[in-house]
Length: 183
Image (tube, rainbow, N blue to C red; front, side, top):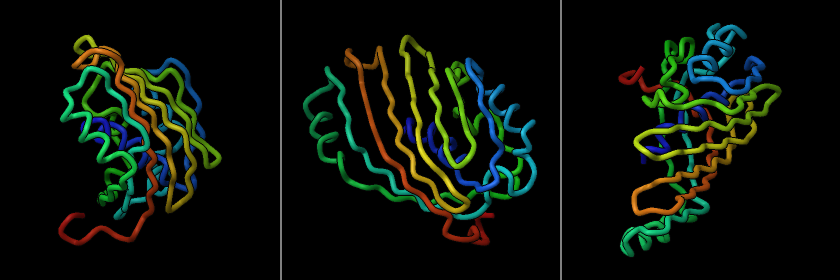
């Protein structure tokens, strides 16, 4: 799911206990990455703790008017069901996240606001591409080895017409070191 691929890095971002405190408005993805770097995010242990992370994502709500009935039925089947996946974050990725870490490959994204510090994270990012406008809101809390986030994504100009809305919850925890073949 493309939205998860874009949001997962933001979720992993919340997985540290000595995270820098950053608060910016009307900032590009690059500017947010630079603010985090300036606040000390690149120093080992200040940003993301490297290792194996297990995340459980639950789609709480999804509406997309104009989709074919089969797609609507599929959305109804997965709503409320948890999906679990694991991700290995290397030491290099933890110490030096790139701009893509925050918004995938979409360079048309801009944060209306991004606040992170004191165990809380809150952001609102808008991405405009190919006639569609996507707004992603993230609100949650984090500690050294776990986080809980609620994400809401709204897409105007989505295929099928109308406005697509998705709300999901993600809970994650660091479960140990990465397997030797992945690190």
